[in-house]
Image 1 (cartoon, helix red, strand yellow):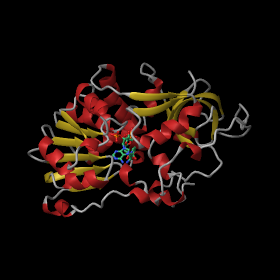
Image 2 (tube, protein in one colour; image 1 turned 90 degrees about the vertical axis):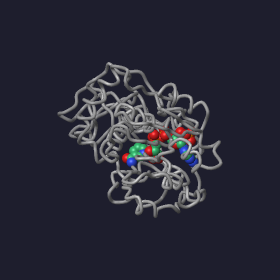
Image 3 (cartoon, rainbow, N blue to C red; image 1 turned 60 degrees about the horizontal axis):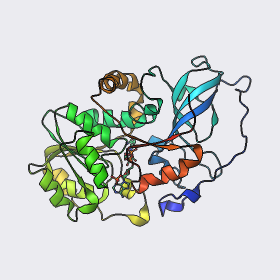
Image 4 (cartoon, rainbow, N blue to C red; image 1 turned 135 degrees about the vertical axis):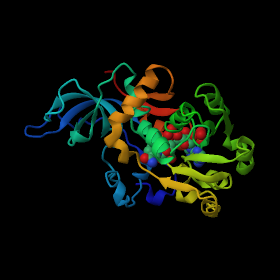
Amino acid sequence: YIESSTRFPIESDFVISTENTIHLEVPKGSNGVLVKNLHLSCDPYMYILMMNIKVPQSLDVFAPYTPGSVITGCGVAKILDSGHPNFKKGDLVWGITGWEEYSLITKPEELFKIDHTDVPLSYYTGILGMPGVTAYFGFHEVCAPKKGEYVFVSAAVGAVGQLVGQFAKLMGCYVVGSAGSQEKVELLKNKFGFDAAFNYKEEHNLDAALKRCFPEGIDIYFDNVGGKMLDAVLLNMRNHGRIALCGMITQYNILEQPEGVNNLINLLTRRVRMQGFAALDYYPFYSKFLESVLPYIREGKIVSIEDVAQGLESGPSAFVGLFSGRNVGKQVVAIAHN
Ligand code: NDP
């Protein structure tokens, strides 16, 4: 465990083991499935599971990791053996699996079957997986966007952010993103079609940067970072604006807390709605999501950038890179071919 979130994770928190831990068949009488893992997803929430803290009951499907056991997280896998009537050998699935070559999944009913394989399978860790659901419902349901509104997205090149910006453009909004390097700023403008973008690390006054990008104020803020950026955004919200509290990556580490959020009073005076949400709540609507998003991908109206690390042994370094912004786009670990 990383005690009380006193630091961000480092590679030496992980141990790579070459033990042979499972039999390559489902035990007799079990309704589990045995899978070969193909792609693993690096997601910021996994850091929270590395701390010895109680997860709120509303999120209790995310049990903290037990030191010494296999890391779990979202991934794409192929069924090798099944004791469950809904799955058969050869099926492709995405959902919670292990950071290992093969996993025995005891609750296969929580997996999503992959029916569309005309897109890269790794997309089911990103644009068509949990981050995609987060971006799609977080933007459309929580932000309730209208054509022509002013939208701001932080960590905008990340797995969630790059999609939120593109959904907002498809809605006819004016979209600005922030990111942590010039390379990422260029991607926002040239690859993802944002109207403007800035490197937050080069702005000494975030309020001034936002005023420059949004002289008339912000209608929707999709917050991936919390901290000082959220505080500056509160000064720039328009009346009846909406803020989706998706993530607070700057505040996951208690020793490096950014300056507090001082500007909350603006929520009241400007009648702004600020709402937290969890991707999990929208999993029952996954088929509606696929129906909407797959055509956009096939027509090239939405693009996605992945940062693919090769091999299970590259997992720890890929994961810790999320907290310094080393990833450019969705961080995936490719561990086997289909
Ligand atoms: P990303 O792919 O965006 O990776 C994390 C990025 O965060 C980094 O690349 C980095 O980009 C940025 N970052 C890291 N540290 C800081 C910092 N101190 N200040 C500002 N930016 C920082 O991750 P995801 O798209 O997967 O997740 C984005 C957010 O959404 C996270 O906060 C995550 O916890 C949250 N989330 C919430 C869900 C929900 O259900 N509510 C579901 C999924 C994700 P840069 O170079 O731009 O700094």
